[in-house]
Image 1 (cartoon, one colour):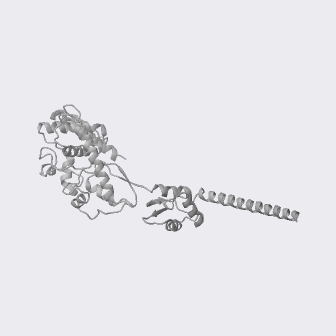
Image 2: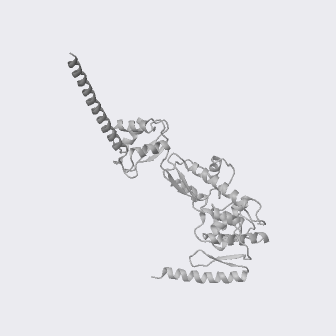
Image 3: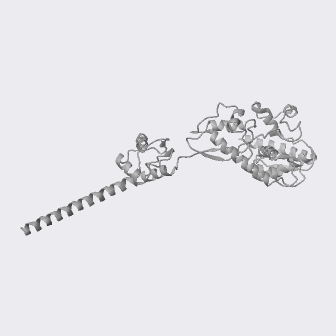
Length: 355
């Protein structure tokens, strides 16, 4: 009887051990399968495929969107288990996420948990005017369009600055945005960036400059920006304008005349344009223009408040296509420089047209 009982116990122990071994083996197999799923590329999608997590989306909804976007890797159970294991199911961040085929499920869920959404870039170029800025925003994809039908006055009111002229108010640089953001969001950041850059430039202004406010510095910086694309020349051009302002000499700068012509400008400035009086014609009016004429960059802002020393009152382009200028202290020197410009310009055009 005792012997039979012992044999029964041994059988139970052996059976339990076998069952335990099977369970452990199955568990190890499932663990290996799960790990293989979690760290293998999702594949099945195009290089530019994305998925968007909307506000209120639960993980099953996100999983359905993943399937609709072409993700066939793994079973729904594997995805749910991994989402629970990585604490993602309850911490999904709203936004658009890239679905590159090389991405693994673990990497994708980590991005969704941390909110590393897909980002786009919009570059506001130095020297653009407000018409060019708004046209570029309309073509920026997938930026949501909220301001396309607004007038400039309505735009500034929407930004919280009613009555303010929009020209010069947005700092040229590259702005990052997500699919959920709008052109108004980008402009708010660009406006704040210009306010900060202008305040910093005005705080660091040189003593004795002929400017009474940061607003005047912004106007002058916009003119400097349109006069040259050569960074190292900006302080010298600022110096010419500062000296002219001090002695009451008209600035006589073509970009202001062009701005006054507006959309009617056809690429040429005629004598009648220089003599027709407008608020922006610095040949017929002394001092600064009533508003900025473009979006100045940070370098132009700094040049406007820190003009280079010297005695030059004139400058003219070299004429060789380099964008550089010749600076002169007297009208006679300037006239000679203009004559050289015309010769160089004709020679440059002749070479360009030669077969």
